[in-house]
Length: 397
Image (cartoon, rainbow, N blue to C red; front, top):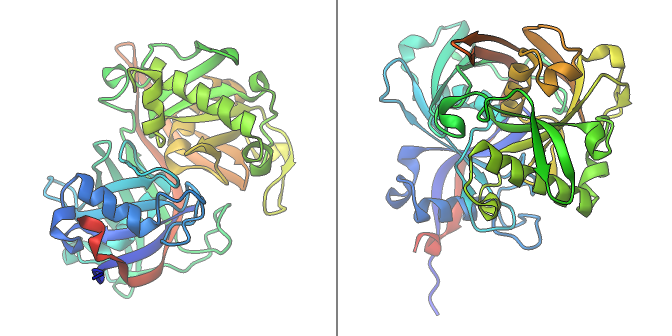
């Protein structure tokens, strides 16, 4: 029996923030995978090593967590005032689908670096030394991200002394600006708060009626109070991910929140939309020991946040969820703002399982609707490996 040989596809394996993913230039993909559809999804699933009933992704580039089962496709932008178009695919670990419904804020930190290194940014926009401003069109959600990428001797500077909790080693700081991060299409026809309320009573069968802030900013997110579901907000991954009943409860909350936000029309659709919305629980400041053993004092943070991604508690914090946190914290009366003390603010530092993170956002109310011009945070990025990735030749058949 004849077997098709493997095909080689140029690719770069990168860390961005607290995530890792396989980056491609659109033009380097096989022609059939340069457009959305089954062939593209099949290719990315095989690259990452999904679906894997063992949930290890041994036969692929994935790392068997939501933070490491990711793909990115970049192309030179044809959109005015943008350098690069950025498409993000969250690959399911144990199921045969790629979720294109949202952005990855962490990998956004690596987009500018990859774009510069791949020649997708006009050379005239890159200083010999200084900071290159890369204008990114986030194609999944139709938003602009501005990346400030440090440049030394005409090349991207990756090393530095910027420390990011959740990442072991320091690197060069990349500042990201998420412009006008509130959703325009999904849930509520463009409202930051799709129900029109800062806080809703969310009825969840088997759980109860929970106070919830349902927000579309950065990524659709459902915020609930930690104490309402029996937690303190100081939990690490093991406390949640080792408890099947807890995971089932959070997935039920997520499904009902998605329905309330108008992101799905029927509850059973939530299973095919794992990447969005996110569900997170918040609590007032308290001391705890992070997953690295670092002590976080109550005085170090404004509030505590724990968030789930792809059905598991995240080891740190998704970048897009951080945008939602910063935006909600800036609006008096949301659960996030109340957990942070209820005062007006344009920046917040929150505690997550790996440590702390600061995010800034300025919100305002115009004609009764809340808006936010941009959210700002710092991350870092680094190329881990570059060359080609191989997949069996029959993958695209």
